[in-house]
Length: 301
Length: 191
Image (cartoon, rainbow over all chains, first blue to last red; front, side):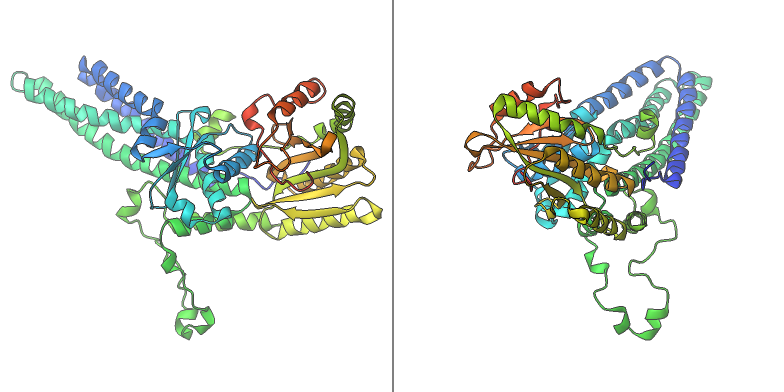
């Protein structure tokens, strides 16, 4: 049996499971609140469900429009298509459509309700800044999002937040209209509102955490597909615009004190900053650390 | 488990299917008999060379393995996409020997844990008036497709001839049915 270099990341899987469990719990609490609301619950469920379904179903068209991206044919962008062709052949997955957005900010995204209906979009700024291997790494990252069905997973995950948002509003209207007449109903509406607000806040944090783990998962998938974690790391560094934080000075030229003090090139954020909790992407140093680990595994004999 | 992999944002890397390669020699005879395409005796293996020491070692081993024992000459070339091509040239043309060597390359890569990095393998033919033709094997899909660039053309393919070759070989080789997967390999080493 040939050896494999592609074990699963247990820690990442465990964290993702914890997040999903939390989101599941939110569903249960929301269901209880909906039950207390009674009749209007069906209406709320219907509206938010339809809204989210539409977002998911038309995700490719909507995102392309929002980013002003246009689909390109293999004749228009032969180089880009060829890289995607090769990555798809290596990963044995259907080839998504390819789009380009005329935007100087270096970015890329993938959307679409299923791998067969997906589109991968890169901005012109990205094409200008990255070299061949870095571009390949970024495309592999987006293809990993497609293969992991991240649009679907995130849509299902964000249902609690949308539902809770709707419930807050309807409970507010409900209590305003009927509260005066019936003391009991007013209390129910108040409880539902408080619960919904809490659920909304907690799901928001959980969804962002899940999104960060999905990003790490896509980074990992990309590094293992191309076998070039370092190229992806360098692309990430370029995109995030923190190039300046990498020292160009040789460590031996630095003052002796700072050379021996444990000061990493990229300042480590150990404390839980608020910014970290509310962001959809993991901090750069976390992503680079994961890629460095994979590079180490690839190099092992 | 496809569902669990989707939930946890991971996937199993696609594993290459190596054995179908050995069906090429008999298919080569069919192509020669029906369409007058003669094998050139060249076979090449394309893969994305991963970074790191482990892979460099395996590449050196492959070189040593194929160079030893007076086998056919081997060259390793990098194309414009960063993929490495190991080209085996047999003289006089011997498709079976070329395929066997290509298989040895694959096996070394897979044994070293780099199977997911294999892209494709191709065996080349020359037709009347020196028209090039290649049979491309997709490792992950386990299927073949023909690639016939028009000589001197600006990256154009002779699609009619490619479809003819597909129809000829359907039944003998597992041909790729999805035409969008027939990606072009312009200027591939060994073509």
